[in-house]
Amino acid sequence: MIDQNDSYISYLITKNRSEYYEQRKKKIEKFRDRRLTAINKLSKKKGWSFGDSNPYFNDVFNILPNTQATNSKEYRKERRKYEKDVISKFNLIK
Image (cartoon, rainbow, N blue to C red; front, side, top):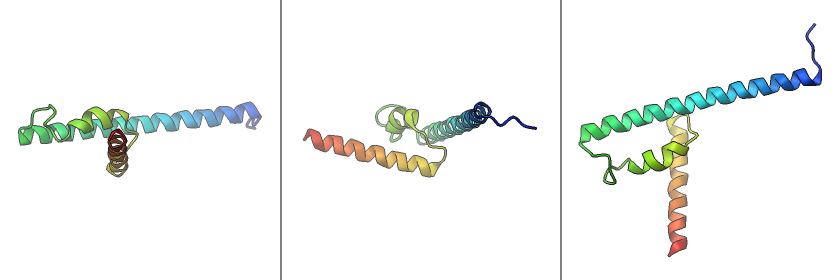
């Protein structure tokens, strides 16, 4: 018979949560790596240096390090939110 006291149940819940977050963390890292690889490949193909003039400069240094996206759809949502935040901060300064 399986021990189903409160401590065992809370242990299982904690274990399942930690496994879920570890899997999600791996998916996020995998997405970041794929995105960076694609940006590097495109930049080399187009002959862009990796400075301020690169169209993906902002993505790499501001959005990707803080993203929680695991796919392109989620990333686009985060990117739009970031752009709206930047615009609203700029309008507050004026």
